[in-house]
Amino acid sequence: MMNRFEGPGSGEAKIRYLDADFQVLSPGAFVRCAVTGTPIPIDELKYWSVARQEAYVDAAASLKRELECR
Image 1 (cartoon, rainbow, N blue to C red):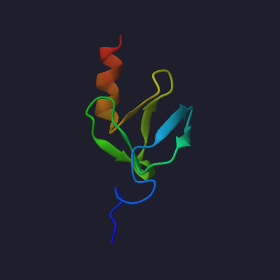
Image 2: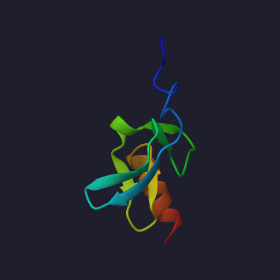
Image 3: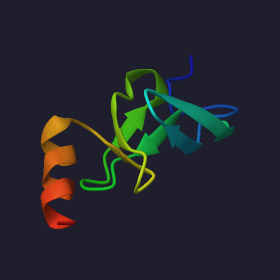
């Protein structure tokens, strides 16, 4: 039995982040949080920055990056 990080398309996806949506450029099972490096399964991806084209594991990571970039 494979887990979600094994098998074809199981690596890191390449994503283009859009307003309220995203486009998968290269298939994969997850993306990495730009702040923590934590893998985020594609089906659980909720936080990202269109301007910075980065994903975040949660709202706290998103806020941390926003404050760092000001």
